[in-house]
Image (cartoon, rainbow, N blue to C red; front, side, top):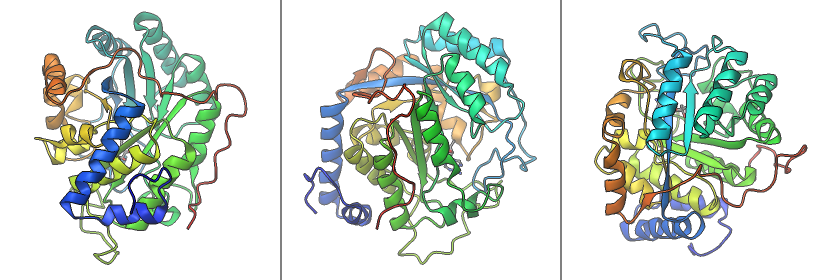
Amino acid sequence: MPLHDTEFTTNQMSRWLREEDPDRLDQLWARADEERRRVVGDGVHLRGLIEISNHCRRHCLYCGLRGPNDRVTRYRMTTEEILECARRAAELGFGTVVLQSGEDPGLDPVETAELIHTIKAETGLAVTLSLGERPTDHLARWREAGANRYLIRFETSDVGLFADLHPDAPRGSVLRVQQLRTMRDLGYEIGTGVMVGIPGQSYESLTYDIDLFRKMDIDMVGLGPYIANEQTPLRGDLNSLPEREQVPATEQMASKALALTRIVCPEANIPATTALATIDGRSGRRNALRRGANVIMPNLTPEQYARHYRIYPKKSEAKKTARTEPGWMEERLRTIGRYVADGPGNRVNRPDVSRSGGPTISSGKPET
Ligand code: 5AD
């Protein structure tokens, strides 16, 4: 498995995902880190995350915010509260705010467009949206209002597994892949990702996920381990795959997926995700930054809301440090030879896709 091939085959990737030899893995981390430094540099972009609403109409089997979970206290932040958080992001020197929510039908498209417009006008920050699957006219309206980027994880490229995990989605749909294409055509930078180790995820299917990031030339990729949530139907016990096929939901496996993603999508912005910090509070984020990641998304959601944004257990605890001690981040980054980057942190060398048409993106069907 030569590490210096520019084109990793899916076969090589899946062998790397199964690799357990610590010396070989050190080579993988080093290669990803080298690629990260060469293409996106040592600066780490900070994106202020604002969890604007935890209402959700979807039934995703793994997620604590799923509509049918009646143990969640639901909230929707007011415009003024959201603006307050955005101003804080600007004061802290962040380049971007990320507005995230469940798939909340109560988020009015016109009001949301006004909010985006006001954030842009007042702070000049880049705005990333992560508001779930939305009709094209909403996406277009928000883009016109000034939103720069949109995140929606496709969760898996395996159509059957997607349908199992999303009982309310039309069977056989690769809707999110289509949505990502639409977003790109509208001029958004597009972000996606998957959970690593979700029950039913095979090494083969995770390999295809990473290959699909490459084929779609994704601008931002979020990867984190699946964390079982007792308040969901999936919990952790449902698993139909033989043990040797099932991807384990470990920090190391998520790191392997992250490192491979950096190698095959060298220009992408890749965050050290909260899920990684949650399963390994001591070194999850730092390891991710040394294995390909170049973005951190500190949580700016007011505590009274953040504690109800429990996609998985302990989520809010893992984020506390970032929220309460802003200087901590700079300090921690310095110890690993990195620094807080200036500016909005757009994708480097981005192809011009803002005009109609956009690039051709190959279909979601993985090659074998
Ligand atoms: N564990 C880890 N990540 C999860 N997500 C949802 N539920 C879980 C879970 N139990 C991820 C999904 C979603 C993102 C917002 O959070 O990938 O897209």
